[in-house]
Image (cartoon, rainbow, N blue to C red; front, side, top):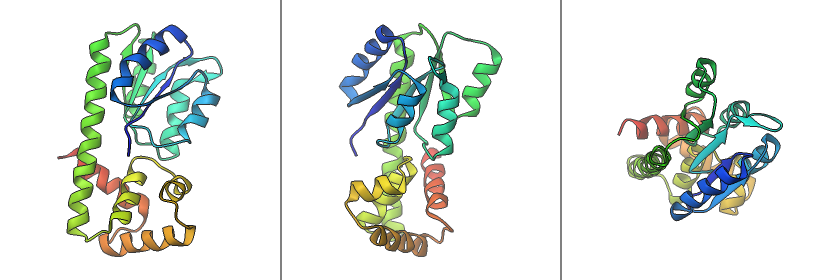
Length: 196
C-alpha cells in the first residue's frame, strides 16, 4: 500500500509548509476542520496523521479520539500552541506524539521516519505470520489493512471482492491464527510488530 499522510490544520501557511515537507515521502491529504477531517479519515488508511488541536468546528483531540474509536491506529502527531497538562496528557492517552507550535522541523522529520519504520515492522511481521500460519496473499493483505485501520468496506473496495468472499477470507484467517475476531488478530499483529 502506498504511503500517505493526512494533515488536519486550519492555519494555511503552516499546513502548506508541512505538506511540502511530507511530499517526498508520499501523497498528502489535507483538511481544515473536524468535519473535513472525518471525511478524509474514512477515505483510506493513512501512514500518519498530523492534527492541530484548535480547529474552527471543534477540537483536533476529539477528532483523534473519533479516529481511534473507529479503528484508526495510524501514528499521530498532535500540533498545538497549547502546552497545558490537560492537552498534553490527552494527546498521550490517544497514543499520539505532540509538538508545540511552531515546533522544530527536525521533530516532525523524526516522527515521520518513526512512522515509516513502524509501518515497515508491521509488513515484516505480517510476512512472518503469512509463513507461520500459511496465510494466503489476500488473507495477509486483509489482516494488514485492518491493522492499519481500514474499515471492512474499504478493504472490500480496495481488494475488489464481494462481501461473502471477504467473510470467507476472515473465517480462514481466524481458523489459521486461532483468534476470536479479525480485530483481535489485527491488534495481536500490531502488538507483535511493536515489540520487534
